[in-house]
Image 1 (tube, rainbow, N blue to C red):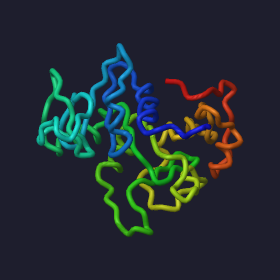
Image 2: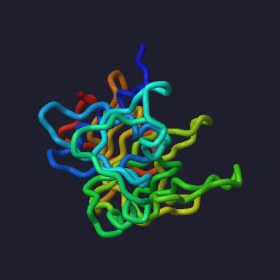
Image 3: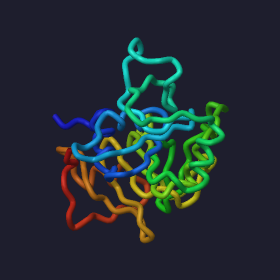
Image 4: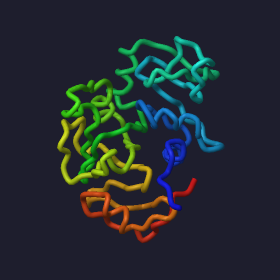
Amino acid sequence: MKEPLGREVMAMRVAREFQDGDVVNLGIGIPTLASNFIPEGREVTFHSESGVLGYGPVLGDDEGDVDLINAGGQFVTPIEGMSYFSSVDAFAMIRGGHIDVTVLGAFQVAESGDLANWFLPERGVGNVGGAMDLAAGAKRMIVVMEHTTAAGEPKIVRRCAYPVTGLRCVDLIVTDLAVIEVTPNGLTLQEIAPGYTPEEIQAKTEPRLRISPDLREVAL
């Protein structure tokens, strides 16, 4: 029986995108798990708005230091060479264009690469936090999320119905069903979860998907 990809598998696929020497910012939720899955032989430096640069994998709730956390409030591993600073300096790094890759969750992503990830009108709550700065300042943005809502509605849409965090800022979408590249000509389906077909992915995606000639199953 085919199953969507789990959260850790999604994080592992995201981590494959990190290149040696990248400075990477990880958002709350599934993105924070990516620090646990750095490909062997690559050196990646993780940055957080909480004021830390150069931390290691996420730790369990009873293993960490309350003063050493990532953006999601999770304890992280201290590593040699890491540094601490104020959140003012952390945001200066983002706004100064020093973040190579950011990984964020989303409520919706439009076919143009617009991102909506800070406010759900039906809940009436939300906080844009550092997402807007990252959307504008990071060199590359990867979104990782479930492909549909709990009700089965597409989260990859023609136009965002929710308040937008940033325009044309998403480069790659990793979901529990697929890996989709955002291009100037639209969305290209690059990889699919084992057992699924392109037609099944399209049925759960509002905009039309182009199928890569190199389409393959998600590989880790």
